[in-house]
Image 1: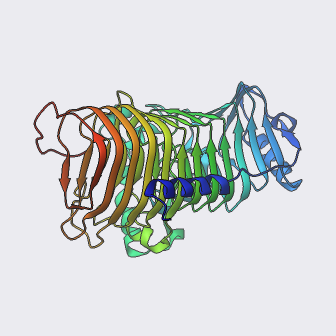
Image 2: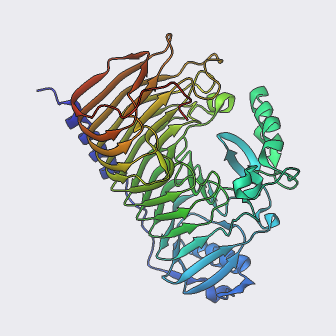
Image 3: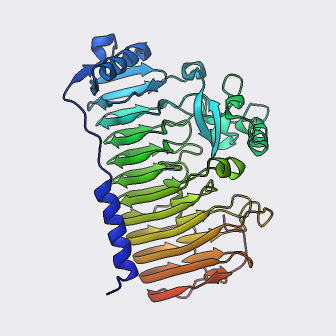
Length: 450
């Protein structure tokens, strides 16, 4: 007997949940205080934390313990076999001095590989690593530090001040030309903000229990990683581009039981951007999001816009979504400049209170419109057992005539209040099954979907 689409999606999601397991660490502890760290909020503990991590790694792994107190530090570099564990009452307070995040490391900025300031917590090419506990990681970003580099006046930038857009055209041009990544160095004298926690080309990654506040940019950013578990984490960071969790070109990821009060997308699945995304050409696949709360600001669950390498097999279930500052439920962002694909995206059992815009938006005409040579492929999008209290629309789906959106299915969904009628263009295979919704409260006038 052939399984129904709903049963097949549940089996695929269950398989990811069964496959992704946290790394295990030897029962050894390495308190940072044994290496000279002082939790007075003043003493620079960078060297002490690095010493405890090195000792733990050299011993074959274990737990680097951060006890109660406030520990000031620069960049923290994780090594294989190390669980950085913050006790309740412990805070890692990160330096606001960009020099504390040198030398430059391999990272991605907006989907393009570069050497830039180190993320505040960073690992490259490591196995079995974790950040756990009940403590707080405080990036100490604010309108006077890091955030003005966004170029947004809301976050402290003023005309004449440096900003990331001063550097972005050059990095983008280097990527388009195919310049070697080693030649793309943007640290001292440049203004790309570092992400908070980034694991690059790592395997068996766990982030559990901790709270992130005041991030310079994206909060959690696994890149080219395998077997990633993010669970019971709180993100409370409403700064510019403060996405909560951005798995990029990763395989087998579970994001479970987290609360996102973010300054941008809560969860944004990515896979590289434009020429660089095509060069690396690694999709994000097998992503499970379950039992999370998404409160603020743009997309609760977003695919893109850096998705040139493609995204497949994304499942979300049993999540609570909505708030006065949250825009979209599912937000798929691409166009013929970005390209890529999004396929087999399945949402089940979501409770949405209110959104300021659409529950589901996929608009190929957003941004650059249809000006590129790489039409995206988006299809097999399933939405089941979803209740929405208030939204502007249920659906805004606009494909291209030469690249329609294919296979969009809603089943057993309820919308209590909608402001406008759906907007659909070049959508093939739309199925609405047991979908209840009221008449919109106003006429549908064309306007920018963003």
